[in-house]
Length: 226
Ligand SMILES: C[S@@+](CC[C@H](N)C(=O)[O-])C[C@H]1O[C@@H](n2cnc3c(N)ncnc32)[C@H](O)[C@@H]1O
Image (tube, rainbow, N blue to C red; front, top):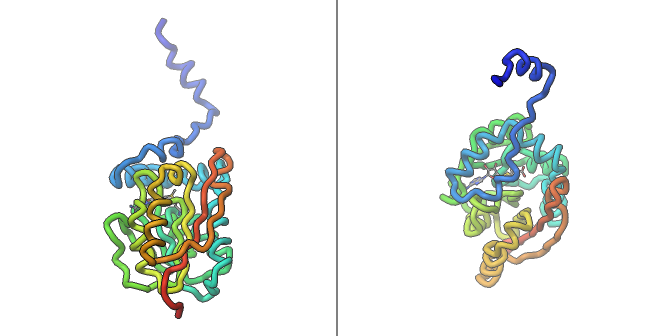
């Protein structure tokens, strides 16, 4: 029997169409092109899915880790892969006021601008290099950005380059990517080369609403601080 068009229309009345979910496919990304398309499509509902629904814990955990370093209230901070700004808002809530952000996705950067916590926002693919002067920042954060098809571990060297000697870099990432092995191997190499020291490493909640845990790793760049 043919479906009754009127009945279908009536069934739609009063229903709320649920937003598409993007978290499940976030761990299947392989290239920057796929990742850019993913976040351009996700931007409008990212905060609701990650922050509200899954109770994203890493921004506050990373801000707390940075507070445990010698990064003072006047520090200039770069939020690498700032996304829609959840990570920058956590830094602002922790008391910092001089925060810049950079990200691959223009749609995510537009949302970051709306938060009002960033002084400057820069569109950049971290895997292609960061067009920022050496030692321009006192500290950097990279929250939820080292992952499959996202920022690759080798880019951590460029993040360290733009932080001053003695400055802190805080990285928050999930267990899926940590267990893949490339990130801990890069951290070991960075330490072995004397570029930075891992000064703290904490395991805990990443996305508790999805049952995902993760690491917050604090590095201190080699050399004497200003
Ligand atoms: C899970 S979101 C995290 C955003 C924000 N830091 C937070 O904690 O909510 C990952 C972000 O990394 C960005 N990203 C992925 N690959 C990147 C790349 N190669 N260069 C710069 N940003 C990238 C994405 O556009 C996205 O905004």
